[in-house]
Length: 109
Length: 113
Image (cartoon, rainbow over all chains, first blue to last red; front, side):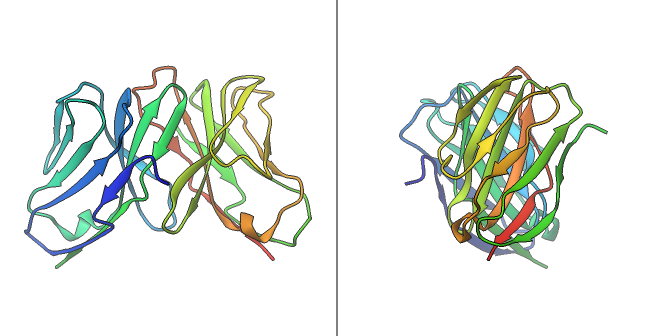
């Protein structure tokens, strides 16, 4: 059983559309991190959110940490083919970092 | 360049033949960890180390060993590999602050036949 549940598992959209990926858990985390992974490579950190209710924006990407620090969402505005990849959320508690199973995003040109 | 280096990138071995996957980081990070990634299961933590000579089990430690004799190196040892250890393995490191993200290596694809 995954500690963090990501949804949807797969997402295919047209260039220019918006998308949202959700990451939910029954556990409380000290921080929630989002990574993006390309085929054949290791995950690369996109953002870390620490405070309940926190919202962070990176260009077209908006990350939100739930008030209770149990869930998070990633919203991409006007998606581009370069946004294609595997998006992973990860919750940190003490020295352990637990990952969701990931959401595969495909943006069609 | 700040990085985590794993070797080898690809490895095919036979059941029962001991192997070591090396991991080295050049960022002076205290914390290092090993993960395996399997389809549909995501990344699962195998072992982690908070500092030199300090290691602990993650979620799936069975069949693996680690050591941390130097700060920069954290090798993963499979004493007697089995086919169910066929997977994609990642080493990661981070500094003291848990809120900071992890830096991952490029991965080692292991096949045990």
